[in-house]
Length: 93
View 1 (spheres, rainbow, N blue to C red):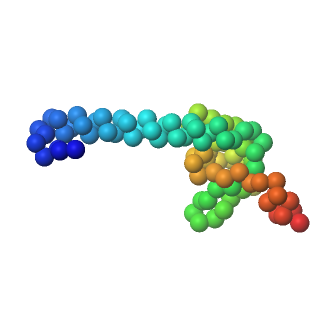
View 2 (tube, rainbow, N blue to C red):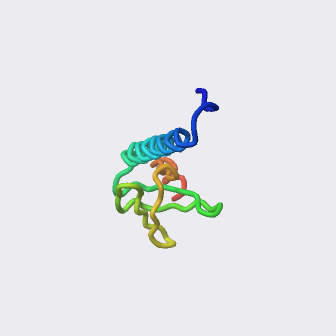
View 3 (tube, rainbow, N blue to C red):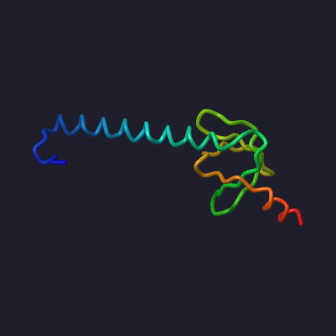
């Protein structure tokens, strides 16, 4: 794409369109990822270098509400990993 010949107004408009499209793609990715989770799922996520585990108590429009030993968290679904049944059994042993 040649942008060297665009005016300032055209560049600003292009920037606005690019930002809008990036936002749409990000929202679509979050919505897609949210479908992987349901209430009761055990998940893990990282916070300040620590791995935290908890239970999904609500699937929100943009995030997961998760209950942990530390309290309740809102977690971006792109940062959450389901804990498999096999892994849970290993943690309990």
